[in-house]
Length: 234
Image 1 (tube, rainbow, N blue to C red):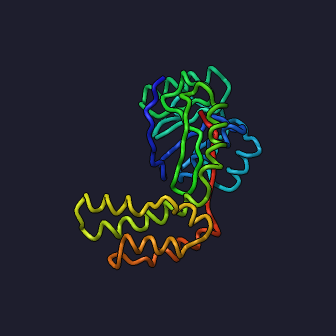
Image 2: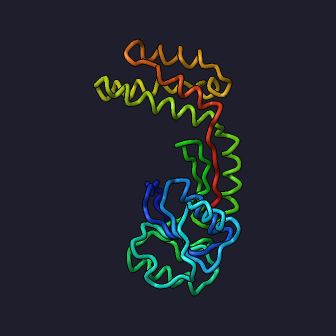
Image 3: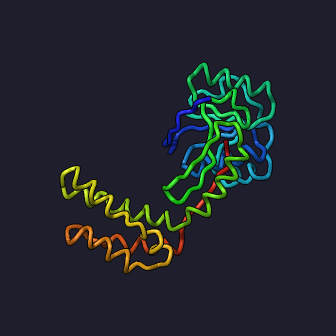
């Protein structure tokens, strides 16, 4: 299967998880991490899913899946090992052009989820097209070591400077030059080693006095509280 890679904004969108076990909980947590509105449909909940429900992080419909349950859904994940339910969910999703992932059953999926290393807004993903989740997981573990928490801080720094540079109303070619020069080969090392004097000096050399660097103080404080995460999928 030749899947088209894409990133979706699911903030406040209705997402449904069919099933209540460990896999369902993991899928639901991934959706919640990206601010989706999650409904779980299952006659029972495992410990992890029950915890999410107890914390009021998702809505639980306490019964098996029924046709019509996908009405209004933006995205659906079926995390059940019942082939009959999988097929019925797939039929409804196809009929209504709803995004559907059936865990570990690529033939019923119209999208799959890559193994992901997350550093703030930086997402590094790898997919095997559903052929070998084990390979994707192994490669994801390697990427965790390669992309440390310093990459989150680097991205926040570059992201904070971007609108300030664009506000200068320079030519596109000049903006491109500045953005490329901002990304010094050693920036990641400087941030990792907390050498912010080198970071500041480099940015000032590129930007001069045109762009204030007040934003660096808040970003530097994030170094003590980086966010990170990883998800194993296909």
